[in-house]
Length: 170
Image (cartoon, rainbow, N blue to C red):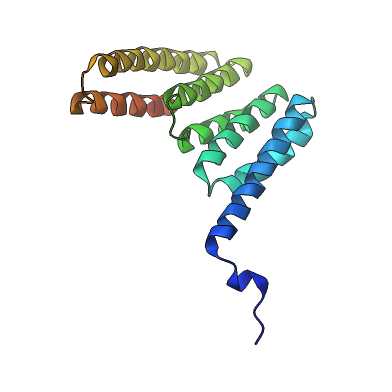
């Protein structure tokens, strides 16, 4: 019995191939967005989000970019949903992870503002401000500690959790 090529291909190659497809859709969407083709960007980024939910680090970027395109097209409900999904997925681990998460929530607030949902936008911006202030205090605690003490690590985790709670306001 002859085996189809996909039956013997190592799983790591499938994974790399899958990530490459998600990445290429994401890059296509970003290129179309940069050239002003927002409808084309939405199509490519929507495909990237559908594929990318399996690869968390790519999914956040795709959802965030999709939210920006939809916001520019004045599709505020869809843009808000994309920003909320990006925040749920969360930015990939990096030194600026908390900043990227808060930027996403801030853009959600801008979407609410553009859609004339002023009370909701105000609450979101207030929570972003509180989270940024908390993050600054956490960073100061972490930077002044001679060792990465448990207190500092817990403080950083608390700041990250606070940024996630912002989306559940109102």
